[in-house]
Length: 349
Ligand SMILES: [Zn+2]
Image 1: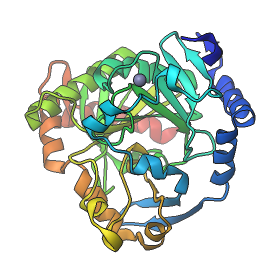
Image 2: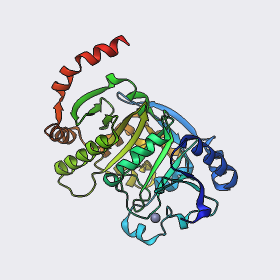
Image 3: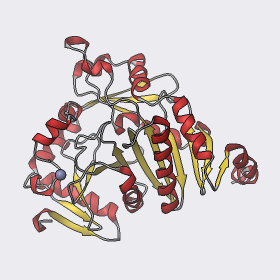
């Protein structure tokens, strides 16, 4: 890693402060970023009530390049990797995170702070091998940030270079929903990790929750492998992930996917709707780079897009049923019996 790309080094301490400093410094020293943050202040947004859930539409022309990004293997092989340190803009610097990742400012922000966290080596998006780093990053960043992952075939604009994102927590509608435990149905428990599902969200959302990083990472990898089994595939199942850390406990929100872009994305002329669902969209912030789409997106259109790109409930049920059969797992019924006392205690507090 070339020393002039390193703004500072993190190997323990207050990462939140360091990231705030980085965003402030880069807005001053990097003209393109300063302008991007300036334009972000003027973006229009409106809330949309869908069947059982809310979304926030954001008209953000700065995201056009991301929304339209080609994920075609030939196109990717033909371009220089824009996440490799040697190809970053000269002004861009980052925090070297635990000698493994570089925390950078995303030059096309969706939120008032928006980080891209790249691996220092060029290599493909792969969540099974990087889930432990993902969880550790969420804990180091703390409750003020939400860490994000896009699978290589469903939203990552650089599927060839491992990277996460981090955005200020609490800005996406799904984060407000999960605060209320009543919105969730407990499905199973594996090695002390609770699996649940958020109800009535118009797309599948599985939550894995636990306070042991290794156990949570292992339960997540089991979930990946049962999904592969159910889908009959060897590659990484299509998914987006949001990771939150608070008071010693992690929550992984997994959005299993069946499709990258909806059919309306590929229509021609007036019929085309430029929405490309990635993790931020699945969390409830739908970015519309074109004004025409921002104006005309309505509840049925958004509900249709979510339904089309999300894996179906029956397939998720099959995967969860396989999880429940694993060693050291308890069924939903067994957990509910054992939780009788826990629920009573919570009710009193
Ligand atoms: Zn690269």
